[in-house]
Image (cartoon, rainbow, N blue to C red; front, top):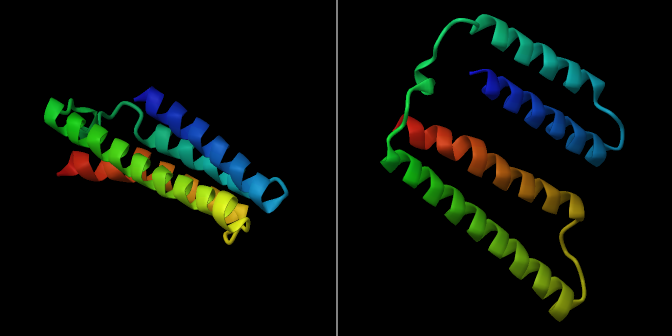
Amino acid sequence: MRNRYIGMLIGGIIGVGVTSLIVGKMQWGLLIGLLSGISIAEWRTKGKESPSDAETDKNVDNKIRKFMLSTMGLSFFLLLIYLIVCDKILDQQFIKVRYLIYYVLATFFICLFIGPAILRRK
């Protein structure tokens, strides 16, 4: 269970760093809120064992793996097609780099957090 909080902490710090790069200045309020939220969550669940720690069967793991690979493969294939068409054929970029970064972040967030959480509950 402790590894989950360390993973949340590392992911949150990376998220704050990416947000700070996009905005152009450090987001201290977001970082402090993140650290305090994770600390409170760890303190509240200390000693409790959640049902999500139960082992999942191989069928669920295979579905999660298949979902992640297909979603990331499709989304990055679409991004690659867009980049090739814009660079080689049109010589013009229609979408700002900021929105492409949002697209990649949303893809990672859906593939690594939302999708597996939904598939594990089914």
